[in-house]
Amino acid sequence: MPATNTTNTLKQLLPELQQIEAMIHLGDRADLSSQVLCHVSCDDGMLPIYAITLGNRARTIPCITYVAGVHGLERIGTQVVIAFLEALLERLKWDQVLSDILQRVCINFLPLINPVGMLNYTRANGQGVDLMRNAPVDSHEKTIWLAGGHRISSYLPWYRGKASEGMQPEAQALCDFITREVFSAPFSLVLDCHSGFGTRNQIWFPYARSRLEPIKHLKEVFYLRKLFMQTYPYQDYLFEPQSQHYLVHGDLWDFLYLKSLASDHIFLPLTLEMGSWRWIRKNPLQLRQLQGLYHPIKPHRLNRVLRGHLILMEFLLHATLSYENWLIKSDSLELEQQARALWYT
Image (cartoon, rainbow, N blue to C red; front, side):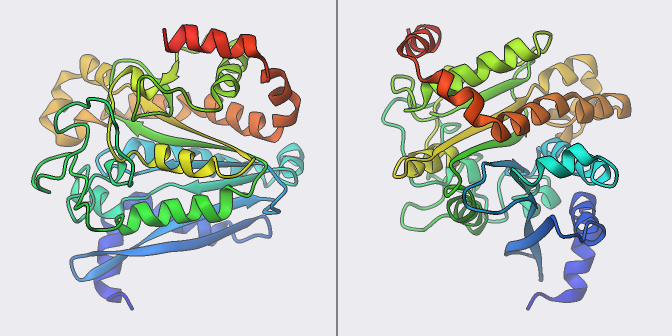
């Protein structure tokens, strides 16, 4: 059992974890459930990793999962997911439309995968392992030195862990949850929220391991992108394969996507990469803080980010719920050719 006093002290240093537990306590109702995926050690205490579920958990129901906090320094992702969950819980007090939606869709929230990293202001977990380089999948093409994932030492960033060891508890808990709770859905989406790259908000899809190999469901992703652009023509997200930017070893979503291909169900993992460089450009002084590389420091800018991605998150929820209405339209050789011309010329 975790050392209660130390654990409570650690939780007091993590306001995001306190928010998560408060929502679980206050949201105690029939359409909300929660589970602790695992505990991870920190000093003499243990910190929980939570999964929260809203809606219908039947295996025949489409499913969307919002993930954040894989990298401890990128706490804005956790705050964006928490803000969305808080909004849904408030709406459930009065919004009959949302109540009806939850009868036909399952929504999972895993808002803080790496609590020790967030507590310690590190990208990696408590063992110095970058969880997004920790899966047992390798790129067969040239990756960025070090940043693509390495096994040299945990003292260097982007460390993958030892090849002889299994995945870290946080990464394993995430993969086990997705395999157990999500793969059975006829259609599922994931949005994993990150920050710290570029001046533009970007939506990435697998693969991170190859510039040459498109995913099996390329035309479905291409049509989803088309729907988003047509529905919200004034947004400014860049929507493309992660491989357009860099290749890595050990990407969790590459691993899970490849694993999902064993079934006939469609699993589409997306990564939201919030462009933190423009926050720095507008406020260079925030570079005096390590967190300033990945997080908007000014309160008005933080509020703008917290509300700015709600449209994307709502769109993906409704796209998941209504997948049968649009998925059949994506089954086109022409769409496949257009996607390859756009991304794989």
